[in-house]
Image (cartoon, rainbow, N blue to C red):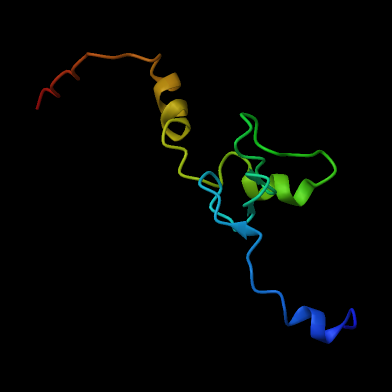
Length: 89
């Protein structure tokens, strides 16, 4: 057997499957760790030398369900449980 074309034909098993945290096909089946986000580690994999990858995963690339309404609540002093006064017509 040579180490070229014939050997590549024998590759039919998948080393990586879908990661349940980041959704990419980077979860190593034998190591049980994700190559992209480092799941099941608590901290998400991120390095200072890879600026472009940080840009893809940073705050603002998702839904921001909590953060997007904070500026409005801050402007109003984080008031809760009050009702607006009726405008006198």
